[in-house]
View 1 (cartoon, rainbow, N blue to C red):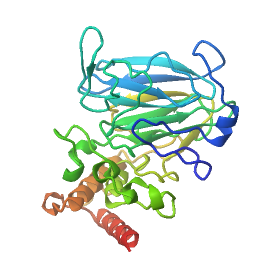
View 2 (view 1 turned 90 degrees about the horizontal axis):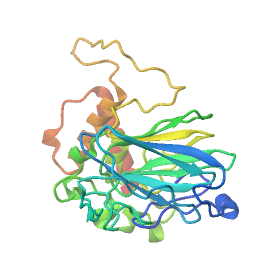
View 3 (view 1 turned 120 degrees about the vertical axis):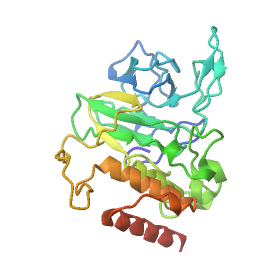
View 4 (view 1 turned 60 degrees about the vertical axis):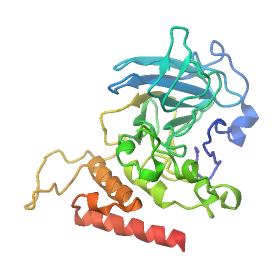
Length: 329
């Protein structure tokens, strides 16, 4: 899931995204102590609880210093990755490990039975951050909800050149998850593919192409809440980002930034309201949250829980409804 139109990566439970042909042709096996270091990944935990990040390198990429570790509330930890490295990161929650490091997690568990994931990927649902570092060229990165969602996460590029936009999902989708997608206990939100296993949701079989696999009502719930994250397998155009020669910060439970590039205009901070008492220039993340809640309630048939919404939000819902109808027809 990286460069639009160049290659396609579909997230899956245990199989990481394959390298695109360019990287396959030039990749070699690296040791963490050898070769040029391309980037530093820093993990930051702003959640009110401990998170256990998991790390999975793609085939042909070396393991980083760790494949899984404990990150206390307010903590951070950094790793260096070599040129051409590719892989994914995620956060595990509700974990219980004994003194020998054996145990399991409620969400994002990798099934290794240990703190270290040892080459195993996240068991869905899990919010994923995916990277392919360039070899003297652009890095590609995204945050994916294709395997579902378990906690808020953003990726920020630091010190690089190019677009280098912040991406991710700051909305608590567990609070807006359609009931049929909720896990037991409500600690995570499944993808429609994971919940129902249908080819049209999984973009598999005869639906394994951008022309055949379209956004579903459920992926639109994810997309409205997290516009820059992958919501289904062929969501490349608005979900893949690039940066050159950057370091990256992966933050769990961020403090709701605007998720914009440095070239975007600054948001309205005057706090003014119109005569009706509503903000004429609402914060885009707040508006997105309201739209997400409305769509989630519509998806579950519980429209009585929706809040009053503006003309702009009404127009948004009508647009989404028309998209859904066009997909179904």
